[in-house]
Every structure is written in C-alpha cells, then in structure tokens.
Image (cartoon, rainbow, N blue to C red; front, side, top):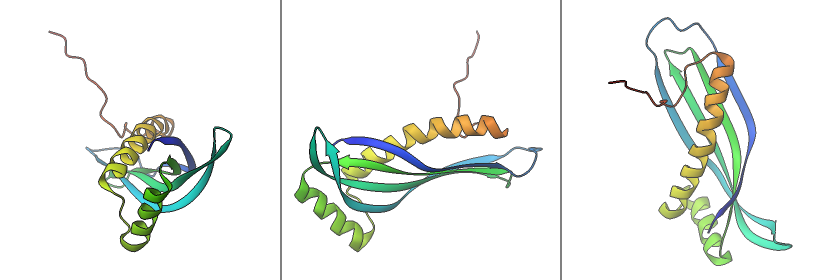
Length: 135
C-alpha cells in the first residue's frame, strides 16, 4: 500500500521574540483525520485514504513556532482500507505498519519545509544539521 501524494494545506512560521538564550526545539506530528477516498490513478478510480496531519515545531522559551498542516494520499486494498477507516473512527489509531509509512513520509517532507521556513523568519533550524569535524 503506497503513499501517492502529500500536500500542504497550511504553512505558518512565526518568530515572537529575539533569541537571547539557549532554546529547546521539539517537533511533533499528529494524525488529525482519516477518511476513505476514491483517487484517480492510472486512468481509473483507486481505493485510498486521505490522511490529514499536523506538524509543529515549538521553540522554548516561547520565541517562535512553525506549523504545517496537510493531507497524505494512501492507496491499497479496499477491504483493508475500510477496516483502517472503521478502526480510526472507533479508536483514533492507525495500524503500526501504515503509521510507520505515514510518519516517515510526513517527517521527510515537513522537516525540509520547516528548515526553509525557519531560515526565512530567523529561527534556528528545527532539525540538527550535520557538523564537520576537522582533525
């Protein structure tokens, strides 16, 4: 069951204050909704899921934040997807195998976008950047 698309519906970055001390950065991903969807794929309709998410980078003390909302499109077997939707409605949980794919796809796209946005508003990068050590 592959992921066939990921789009943003909201991009928000705000710097509230100048950075004068060490800050802590935390990133959080939340799946906010799961619903059945018929996706046009290969000239025909494909059963799928539209999975809505929210990615938030918080900078503490409260000097700024980045919020990204979006939708991920996931295709697969109709019966399995119906079970996923039914379980989501009941427990607000996704199966571990699907959640793994969803979180990895969201992290990959959101970390890059949050990095760009943090630079634009003058916040430190929300993900650790590689460091070079010269010996």
